[in-house]
Image (cartoon, rainbow, N blue to C red; front, top):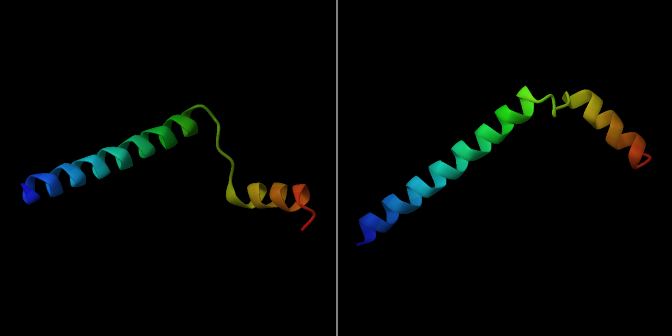
Amino acid sequence: MIIIMEKYEDETERKEIYEAILLGVKDLEEGKTQDGPSALEELKEKYNL
């Protein structure tokens, strides 16, 4: 039973990772991303840093 549970947990974790990657790809395709330097600049301005 322990081996079966470990396999289930591994597969569940892998599925969650794949889903997160797919969401990221979707965001890229829909233009919902921003490059790092401009995102940091925006945060600096927002929080007066």
